[in-house]
Structure formats: C-alpha cells, structure tokens
Image (cartoon, rainbow, N blue to C red; front, side):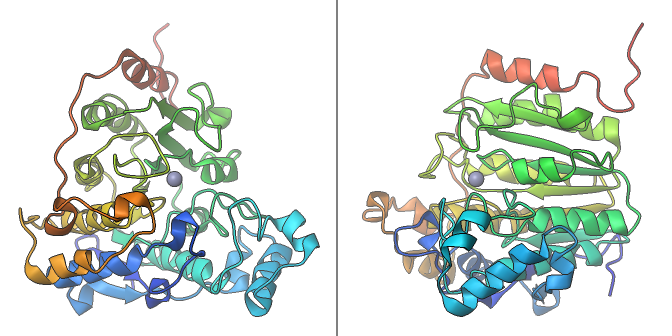
Length: 380
Ligand SMILES: [Zn+2]
C-alpha cells in the first residue's frame, strides 16, 4: 500500500530492539526503540492502524548500497557470534566500537527494512517515522560509529529510484552525518545538511565542507542550546528548504545532542527536536523522520515519543499518566547518572527549555551556508 498525501503518519518499529544490546559496557547497552514504543502506547498515542512492523531487508535490498561481501560477513558474524581476524580488519566488525552482538545482522537489517518501507509508503506522499533508523555513519563496505548498515542512504536511494529527484536530508545528531553525505557526494538529487558538534568524532563536516556543492555542514560549539538551534532553524535550515523546494525531506533526529547525553557536550532540550519536526512538517509532500544517536535511555525515549506527538499534532501532557510513568521508572542505566535520576525523567516528556545568547559563530555559520545554494541567482 501507499499512503495518501493526507494520510495519518505511520510509525515503523520492531520488537527486535527489545532486549537487544551491544554489550553491557557499550553506550548502546540501553533500550531505546522499545521504550519509545511502550511510552507512546502507554499514552494512547499509537492505534494499531498507525503502526507497521519493520520487515528485515534482504541481502539483495542491502546490495543497493552495501557490498555483498560485507553483508555476508555480518551474517557470518551473527551465525558464529564471533569474527575472524580478517573480517575484523577488513569490515571493522568486532572493532572500533562496533561489537559482535546477538543481532549484529538482523537488527541493522530490520532498521534498514524499516526505512525502506518508509520510503515505499511515502512514494506518493505522506509521513513516516522510524525511530530504529538513522544509522548515518554506516559505510558501503564496513561498520562505523555503532552503525553496521546505512538505512538512511538506502531509504534515500529508494526515493531516488522512485523518480524523486529533489531530496533534502537534514541531520541534527550530535555527530556529523558523514556516511550519508559521502554516499551522495556525486549525486545532486540528494542535498545533505548536518548540524553537529564541532571537533567531535568523526571530525569531518567542517563549515567549508560542501561535498562538491550539494552538502552543507554547521559545526556548533559545546553548550549549543535551544535558542541557537532556533536561530539555525529560521536563519539557515528553513531558507535552505525554501530555496531547494524539496519533493521529499528526511530528518535524522538523533537524540545525542540533548544536554543529558553522555557522548556529546551539546545542551539542547527536547523542545529543539520537536520544534524542528514541527517546522519541517508540510514543507514537502514526503517526510521521513529517523532516530539516530542517543545514549541516555530516559532522554532518548522522552524525546522520540514527543516526536511522534508532534507528527500527529498531539498535546504533550505536563505530567505523564501513571502507565507512561511506569515505563520510565522501569528503566535502569549502568552509568553514574542512572543511579539517582531526577524526578522529571519519570514524570514528564517535555524538558525545560535551555535558553541563552546566540553566539557569533552560530550566526556566522548560518549566513555562510546560504551562500551559493544550488539554483540560487547571485547578484552580478
Ligand atoms: Zn550521534
């Protein structure tokens, strides 16, 4: 089936994430998608008709972007629950933060299947949300940055293959969306725009990096807050949308730029993510929202549940009903901050806004990325 342009948003999830872990010491030891689904269900926000179970992408589907040798290596690692020295060196499996874990092939293949389904469902218009997607570091022939496959690239390619030729990919994860940018380096159908922490891994995506013309990057300083993101939204991102007039927008909505995240030094509240989602809705006939990074289990689930509320125009209650609170109280976290979580992580979805002065570097970056956009008429 294909969604009507006016159809209700669809949530694409899977039970494969429940109980899945990259290992007890890994940042992705935590539940994220399962908690998000439990929360939106506890809030009464997910009627059965709005939910689709993610299919698992087949090796043939993955081969649209990934090398068959690499896909086969992931399948081997899952079957053996170990990796050969050769595969470790060649494919970065079992190395560089990409551990061998129980669902090392089937979980990322399910994420990829979810984003591929989202692209299919929105072919003629509509909105789809894949919180298990957003693995933006994945490379054609190797794992990178906790990402084994690149569902975002596969979804964008599926849109391209459906004849959609003006696509905007926006990435607000704390880390540069390097795998997506590089995948479309020579493909003007997909324009990529990434906002990420300056000086953080993978250390690419500088302000001057335009990937041959159809990418823009906004590295932002530590402490980057809601007012600065609002500035970028109105002074950089929305002007890019107006200039490019995309037929489709994909938003990677990683939650690791939140103040409470242990892997970045950015200071957004989830209001920033929700404002981004709201602002992008309706600006193109097709919208896919993906998850991404996010390593504090409470912060991620509260943020991503609220994203679903925004997509559906639902009001976020000031205090969560008991069933939703129980979902959050059931979480544990192996890090120090998990020993004594603040009460509002249990009782609310919405963070307090994080306000501040918009720093000069943020203003400068916003102005800089608007120069020489594709199709722009420059004054003589
Ligand atoms: Zn990230």
